[in-house]
Image (cartoon, rainbow, N blue to C red; front, side, top):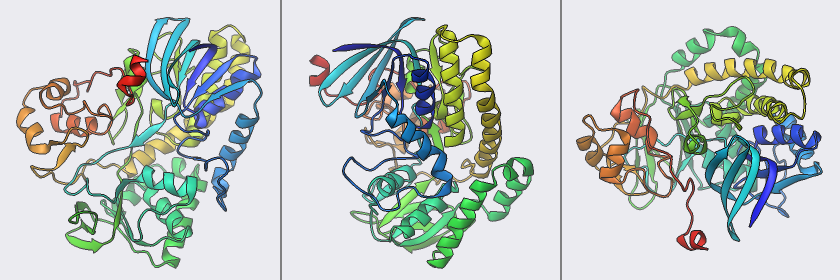
Length: 450
């Protein structure tokens, strides 16, 4: 089955929604493709249809997102394609794109005149001894359970890493009735405070987010959850599942571990299309390069949100608005004056959010806090490739050469989890990482054959 639209948007989070609302209001046909059945992205992950969650996302900081998602779901003429994964993107010309998409019904093709990739980000995977034990989660995985279904994985949660989001997750967990045994930051509090103090205007401009962090700390104090700084994580312990976590040389008992070292952009599709990319930030990963209208270096291919660098939902919303105006301008639906008018306020908002994102990136810098690897620590979980095999091969080999020799990056995740670690070990800024190849997501041979 082939469907054709003016614009195909990959990602139904804040950026994709904002762009779609701009474009359908101008009378363009828009398809929004997302792996989740309902729109919202990770930041506003909705419960399944027919499943009610008391107090879902009621914090004031979520109000703009809730308002936008309500307008998005009510927008006439918008074609929502949830529950679908984009396997590949083919550029057949500046006015002719094709997306190969997998769905419960099989593989589909979507054709469009323009494409916007607003695919979001993912947790930075940080290998350490014991990290493959059942009961170890990335921060985003924990939030997915909490936000969409109010499910608390495990009974005694331990959180560790460098990113302040773990405070929010801990507060959401105790708010849902769960138990948190401790929150551990690898970096000293003095270092984090010094970074914040280095850019007071950026911090003050986002006082709402800072107050949310203070509110989370208060909630944890009320529930007597210890929050410790200068406690680098060393290993997860347990026989058949998680039994505890070693941080700062001390073992803390628990049955669930959440790791939070930061986030990296979802960049496979821009890379597959040949778009220029850049190093994304201190956590690693790649971000798509774009112009002032959010157009990538591939004509007709636009990018927005965390695909262009992890900066948070408000920045993503603003980028989506800019991209919507840029796409409309590129298609000749509006003129330059109208496009500037549509994008002006969003540009100002995004600039402020990016300044704060840079500050948060420095606060959460994980580079001095990665746990030491042991010979049998799996770097590539998909293909069971241990650290010893990779370290022995690196020398002057590229990431692609190591991939061919070890199968690191050939598994179901297509290198999304292991690539940042491999590039840290190679330590060569000239190495572009793995070549992005079809399929970008797992798919059965039967679906492809069909």
